[in-house]
Image (cartoon, rainbow, N blue to C red; front, side, top):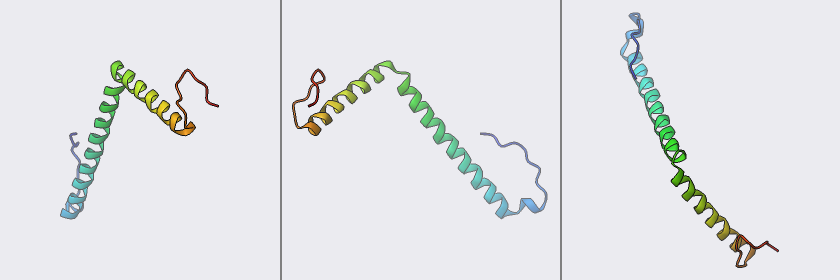
Amino acid sequence: MKICDVNFTKEDQSPVNMLRLDEQIRRVNDTIDKSMSFKFAVEGVLFDKVMQARSLTFMRVVTVWLLRIATQSVYTPDKTIK
C-alpha cells in the first residue's frame, strides 16, 4: 500500500509524531494483509467443489457418530431415534 504525499507542518514533523504515524501505518497494513489472506483462504475452500463435498461427508460422519454417542445405540441415518 502506497502512502499518499502528506503535507506536514513543522510541528507535525517531530520524531515522536512520525514514529506514531509509521506505527499506525504498519498496523493498518498488517490488518489489511491478514484480512486479504483470510478472504483468499475462504474463497479457495468455498469455490472448490471437491473440498465442499469432502467437508459435507465429514460433517455427516461426525453427526452420525455424535448421535450414536448421545443415544447410546447403533444409529444409522436410515433409522429413527427412539
